[in-house]
Image (cartoon, rainbow, N blue to C red; front, top):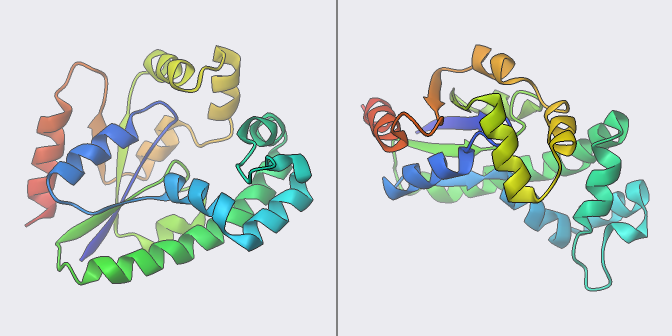
Amino acid sequence: MQKIGITGSIGSGKSIVCKIFEQLDVPVYYADERAKILMISNAEIIRKVKLLFGYESYTETGELNRKHISDIAFNNKDLLTQLNRIVHPIVFKDFDNWLLEKEQLKVKYIIKEAALMFETDSYKKLDKFIVVTAPMELRINRTMQRDSISKEQVISRMNNQLSQEEKLANADYEIINDEQISLIEQVYTLHQQLNK
């Protein structure tokens, strides 16, 4: 079973591409979604995040105070690095456990979706990489609409990731999500290649 990583810059549309793969019965591990779940359910993460960002990192009901954390982390690279060091190792273990379940399915390949792949060590456990690309303005507009944030905030977040060009340099495959070329056709063609 091949382990395929899928990544892309913020606003590139990784999630929609993954949903198409799922329609083709490909198991997809959403690292960023799992991280959000683990950040409110894993006692070790909760304790360390509170130490790093203060008790206001969580609401009284135990929800993550995303605005508080992102306002601090995206403006302080050192704190963002420390946050990633807390969360990523536990997400890696979670992925390994998920993989053991999926191996029983005897599929040709699975997909791991993550915004930060080459920026972390997670790429070392994967066989090949897909990078989803889109023009800069489109990525900015999508993120502004999705997260209800300003253009400046989007650019600040982009500056904490590798550029689209740097991600592409490490890619085995590219899927272009520019709202011009058919995503379904691109995914289906790649699915046939990976299933050989």
